[in-house]
Image 1 (spheres, rainbow, N blue to C red):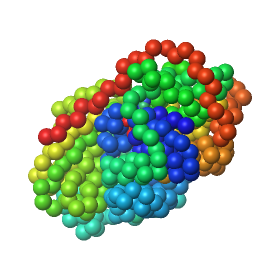
Image 2 (cartoon, rainbow, N blue to C red):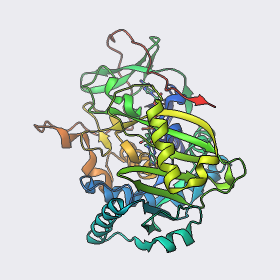
Image 3 (cartoon, helix red, strand yellow):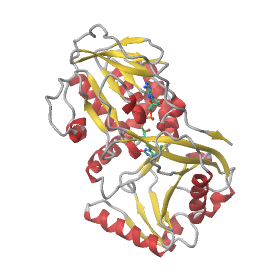
Image 4 (tube, protein in one colour):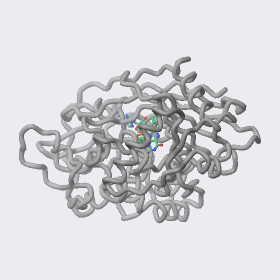
Length: 404
Ligand SMILES: Cc1cc2nc3c(=O)[nH]c(=O)nc-3n(C[C@H](O)[C@H](O)[C@H](O)COP(=O)(O)OP(=O)(O)OC[C@H]3O[C@@H](n4cnc5c(N)ncnc54)[C@H](O)[C@@H]3O)c2cc1C
């Protein structure tokens, strides 16, 4: 089988399936462009919740519930750390209007049964002494953790290679078919790879594959910064803030190595630019609530693209062809959703059944009519011969990353 894309989602699926005895080739694309590298690594089903995206909550919670076991398995299988931190998240408000918004969020969380403890300013600063005295109040959310997504991704990759995943350099251009059955892929350099199962896990680029109906996935640009505390005190937990109406998060890594500040949310396609305004606003907002961040060194500015679907929930399970499997559209929660996605997609490939928790997230939910669903991947079928593919085009753009 072939996995298209070697980000967190593709790597975790490839590792699980190789561990189950499948022969797996993973076409890795451009690792430097992956959202999995760029992301902040928050595991935040509670503070990331959106009033309009509640359908995603059970899946997000299910994935968080698996994270400790998943991270331990990855560490065991790879011999590498994953940087999982179970320290709670603190979400704060800067002025009276921001506090009103946080109060609305707290009422919403109460209504749907999610736990968050209300903090007055003094309590918030007792928990996080680096907070500005101007902070008006906050919420303490035990259920929102974080992970060093770069460490996790490296560890899953190593675990996959140990389990036998073969990594193929290049980009899939075209998905090949024989009748209604997927038969393999053609790479951008013209190389043809045969397979009876093809898993599409190429994040924000999933909509660009040819040979199948365009998948409804769009890139949502995010600018994000990495600061080097240079030995100065750093926050002891993830701090999220609403500051004069705009939102920022500050995610510290264990050992004082790095503090991540993010992120812009821009509907600008694959625009690569790190802008002065984007960097300015992130630094300004972080400094308002955590003045110490102004003393840190600006170590990296990066752009990444979240894979957004029409409802901003992932697209999991059967594609339009027999043997075509989809695992994309994870938008703002792909790091959080890695364990549950890897479990659901590997179960689907191995058994033909999509686990209950993933069934609401098939591509079919966007269909206006309901054609006969394709049959699940067959363990026994071999790839038919390849039809002619259209000529390969260029590879996805690399993001603008500046090491400062
Ligand atoms: C600024 C920012 C902050 C974020 N913060 C968080 C966070 O705190 N918590 C969280 O849960 N999520 C976060 N996310 C979202 C998360 O990063 C994504 O949802 C997740 O990484 C998606 O993983 P993926 O493997 O599907 O895609 P990616 O990580 O983007 O990987 C896709 C890979 O496929 C490759 N590829 C593309 N086209 C092809 C092709 N044709 N053939 C072969 N390979 C191809 C690409 O080069 C890339 O390497 C953030 C995203 C951004 C941009």
